[in-house]
Length: 475
Image (cartoon, rainbow, N blue to C red; front, top):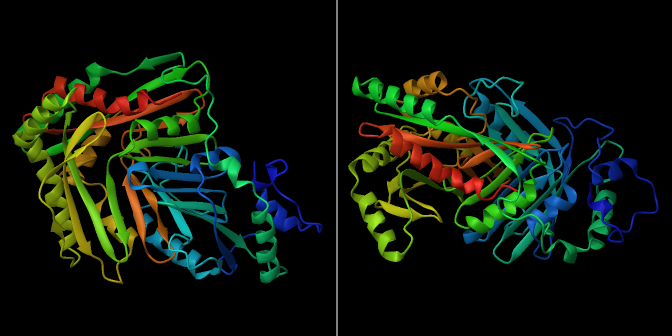
């Protein structure tokens, strides 16, 4: 589906420009986009729309998409269609990704409302947890794409960005004129609210659920034995729940439920263009870079929320005093501070505090640093991934043990997902509290940090608490 499929919303041009129409309909281009292709990036301020409504209307299962929204921050971005893409494998995937970003932005000619603060074209990225995921897995080791269509929403402002590749026979000014004609006839009013199926309600789908609790607990016990003999001091063991439903899962409706249930989390979705989607509600930002200011979060150690204010305060105080949870948290914050200092940065951390989410609360330490002009966001992603919050200490040994213990491929679970924009800003989250959706099947992921003093039964209970994020939202 494309912009042009909105009935009575668009007036098509009299002339038949096949290349432009193929682009607009999100059909394959008749010419290859190379490193020498000029790309017109047209920014256009639009009325406030619901980005999920835009994805529902225009994106389809045969193309890449990216969606991210944080309701409490009033920020969202959606991208779909491919102007240019690349895949990276091997150990150098982040530096190769940075080269792709640099190449894309070097080809861009900015047009339209390019002075809009949010009107910057972006390259969207997803990386698997391990760098050597096989090509047969649902997602490649690194997926990068400059989208055809991108919508950014921040506070009361909303901007559409169109990235059109020029063939040698196309005229730049004529393409800009055609884009304006298309945009002036879109019925934005129809995109202000998501059309949901009223018959879909939470937990409405008949489903079969399977998870191996005994195996998880046995793995925790084995990990504790390794910790006792100082093989490592922490390891994060992930656990999955497999669900088969009586009908295909509705990705857009499930995302809508997630943002209602978890307004303080980063709601996200990315696709592989082959019908598989990775969605979730992550509380964890890996990095944010705005105007060379880096922010990252040490997030580890958790407890449930209380059923009332008194119980909630009691649980919070217990968490703040819990030696095991604080030890787990300190491992994360120390790692991040040390890594940032290793490249000459001077990070500062705020005092330990609580991040309170709808069903869980975490120990949280925000960390700040100024980023010199010669250090790019993807270099910081490479530096920090995987943190002890999703791997362990030491990282190398923990990752080796994770491969040994876990019976499944982590794929995008606990991995970096995000974007870098034209001016070197970027944001990446960690793909936790997440699910792989494939038709009528879903694999839900959650992890628990195992340190000395961990209890296998309590860790399994924590996993169940984290899985609720998705279990309550999938329809």
